[in-house]
Amino acid sequence: MTGKVEKKKKYERLNPKNDFLFKKLFSSPGNEDLLIDLLNTILKPAAEKRINQVTVLNPIKARDHQKDKEAIMDILARANDGTLMTIEIQVADEHDMQKRAIYYWSVVFASQMLIGMQYSELQKTISINILDYVFLKQTQKYHTVFHLREETEGFQLTDIEEIRFIELPKMLARWKRGQLEEERDPLTKWFLLLEANEDQEITRELEAKAMRDTVLRKAIREWERLSQDPRTRAQYLSRLKGKMDHLSALKTAESRGWAEGERKGRIEGERKGRIEGKIEGELETLRKGIIDILSERFGILKTDLSNKLSAIDDPAVLRALLKKSVTIANLEEFSKIAGKNEP
Image 1 (cartoon, rainbow, N blue to C red):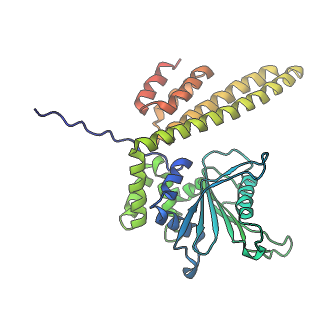
Image 2 (image 1 turned 60 degrees about the horizontal axis):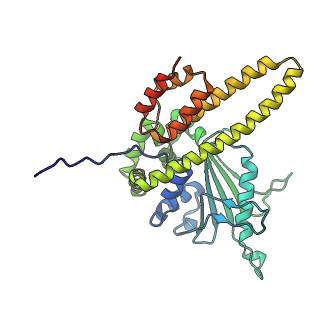
Image 3 (image 1 turned 60 degrees about the vertical axis):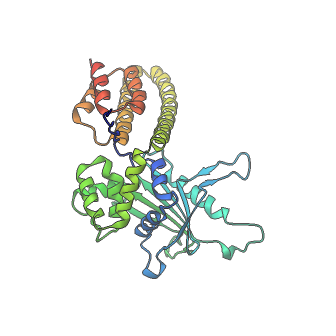
C-alpha cells in the first residue's frame, strides 16, 4: 500500500533584525566566522589588526547590588587581541539611546576589573549599536563613531573606549539612490541581509552577492535553517509577543499621560480637541504596531491590507487585530479578518 508523502511546510524567513534571531545567527556555536566578518566590516581595522578569532561571552551582566539594573546585551564577544565588543540591535526607538549605549559600554568595561588587577590591564571596549530608526538627525552619516576628546583642541584622551551607531534607514536611503556599494563599504552586504525581508530587489542583490561570498552564503543558509526550525520559530514568536506586551505597557503609560493632559485641557476649554487627538493617536499607534509585527513576520505588506487597517476607526477592533497579528498563520487569513471589520 502506497500513500502520499506529505510535503513539508515551508515558512517565510524570520526577520533577522529581530534581536533574538540576530543573536542566534551571529553568536551560535559554529557561526563565529559570521560574527568575525560582521565585526571586521564594521570596524575596518588595518590588515595586521583584523580580527581572526572571537570568543562569545555571556551577554548578561549580573547585578553587584540588589538595586542595580541588570544589563542584558544581544552579543558580547572578546577578540583575539583582548578587545571586548558588544552588539545591540534596536528596531524601535525607546528613547535615551545615548545613555543606554554609554551605560552598556561602562558595564562591560568595568566588569573587567578584578581585585589586585592593574588599570593598565583593562582592555579596549567597543559598543556597536545597530538601529532600525533615524537616531542622529544632525548628520547624514549612517555610521558614526564616538570617543572621549578634549573640548577645545579635539585630541583623544584614550582609544580604550569607542561607541558606534549604525542607522539602517540612512543606509536604505543611500541604497535607493545607488550610493551604497560594497566596494566602498564592505558593511553593505550585511545591510542587505538585514533588510532582505522587506524588499525583493534587496533580496535579489543579496543572493547575487552570496554567489561569490562564502561567508554571506553560509549566513543565508543558516538564516533559512533557523527560519524553518519549529523551536526557533516558537521562541521567536514568544519574543515578539513579549515586545508587543512591552509596547502595550508603554502605550498604557502614555495614555495615562494623555488622561492627565485631558483633565488640564478641560479646565482650559480644550477637552474636545484633546479627546479627538488622543483617539486618533491611539489608532495610529495600533495600526503601526500591527504593520510592524506583520512586516517582521511575513515581509512586505500589500497596499490593500494597509488600506483596510486605515479604514478601521475602532480602537477595540485594532487592539484585537494587534493580538491576532502575533499568532496568525499567514497574511491572507489576517487580511480576511481585517476585511470583516471594515466599516
